[in-house]
Amino acid sequence: MTTETQEPQRREVARPPFYRDVRVIRVVGQILAVVAVVGIGFWLTRNLFSNMNRLGISTSFNFLFGPTNTAIPFCDNCWVIPYQFRFDPRSPVWQMVLVGVKNTFLAAFFGIILASVMGLLVGISRLSENWLVARLATVYVEFFRNIPPLVIIIFFGAAVFTAGPFPILSESWEINFPATDNNLLIINNDKWGIPGFTSTGSLVVFWAILIIGVVVAAYVWRRRTKFFEQTGQPHHRVLWFTGVVLASLVLAYFVTGQPFDMSWPVISENRRRIDGGFIVNWGFMSIAGALGLYTASHIGEIIRGSILAVPNGQSEAANAVALSASQRYRYVVLPQATRIALPPTINQYLNLVKNTSLGTAVAYAEITSLTKTSVGNGRPAFQSFIIVMAVYLVFSLTISLVLNLVNRRMQLVSR
Image 1 (cartoon, rainbow, N blue to C red):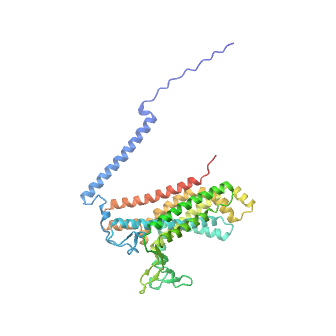
Image 2: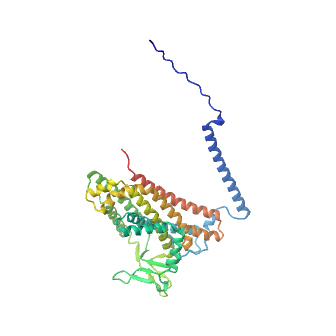
Image 3: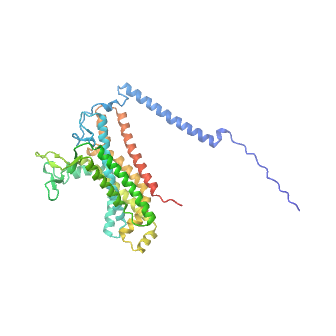
């Protein structure tokens, strides 16, 4: 008996008309969306320039080269760029912008450091077996996380410094360096004085040598890491890195002829100002401290959740080889938890940078506050705030780029 195999006949499916084709509709929809966005943007831009011309407002950025005619709080003859430009009311507006960028960077930088350290401590403390430590960490998180950052900033500015426990400038507390007459710290409710440096010559060669030293230190770090991977012996890369950087710092200092000297803070004879040293004003301490503590409450929860996400078997294995609690966290738990915690922590860093714009509430001269003052003095608002948005965009994209590269480097690669 033979079986005849018959090939099934293919049905010809009629294609829908183009106006019902999903692919065509998708492409046409995207084109229309782009055209609509471009059209609305063109319409708004044309209206903007038309209104500016009608009101006699310049549409150029030439105002950046005109005199500022405005004093900056706590910036009497201060440096715009270290040892390059000094700001005064006759300085051009672009130097005022650089002062704002510098102050924004400093507040964000020290705020991130405080938030990272406090967040790590709070996150670990939340999981502590000590009842008191765990409850104190919980109170910290619930307190700061549920209060708006602006309120915390104003609290620091008004309740801690302006009307807080610190004395007025004429009655400042002076803490001497041990066994010397030099002031290690001057404290009052307006500004604090700490030891600093004063330039005695050009620092271009000094910074060049120091940068080369940091690059060499990074190379040594990488070599020590490979040495550990190949031999299993301790790498001590932190000590090697620190040693190379310190050696390059000492070399740069003496090769360039000691281009700076130590400067100690002192109270003037009339006790109305602090001379010498490095001056830290109350606005900076309010914004950096408040944002650092506020952001730490969120980072602490990220750290806690990341530690809990590490499999329990890892901690059990660490206990099996007799690692102490600190060694277990340092060598086993935290390295794995960091891979989990870094992506959401990046978002907290970005929020902290953008929240520095609240510094206007405590008279801190960051970029937003200075721009508002500049616009109030007749500078064009559109161009001024375009610059502000560009500054925050550069800050945010730079932080995202660097930390995403670190995150990619830390991720496990399946082989």
